[in-house]
Image 1 (cartoon, helix red, strand yellow):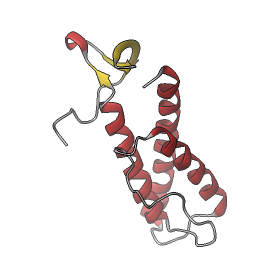
Image 2 (image 1 turned 180 degrees about the vertical axis):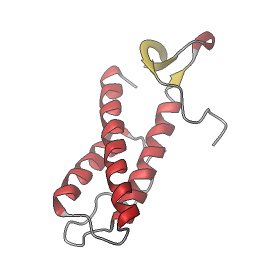
Image 3 (image 1 turned 60 degrees about the vertical axis):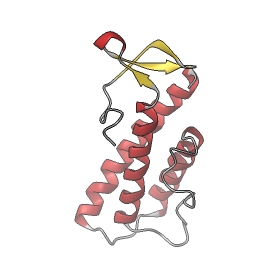
Length: 128
């Protein structure tokens, strides 16, 4: 990854997480209610931008591109897709970070350890 990719990645991961929390809360209250078009527009935008970051091996579903705004999905459908995207984003992150010498975690930029710190992975490689 390049530094600009990492910046985009961090923004997308943060936005996905926020959307997931919001839709997940709605899904617990009313799982079969439709997501409104206003929210769906932004969800689709973030998913589309995430597709630009995820490599083909990290994309959750080959067939899924966007939610249809004319056939509104349910809260639980959107929560499912957002959770899959979050998991795949984390897999991409785990594949592009290292912990040199047992210290903090750092991004790999062009295959080399950078000075860009990140949090510890949610899953270590090999635990998948």
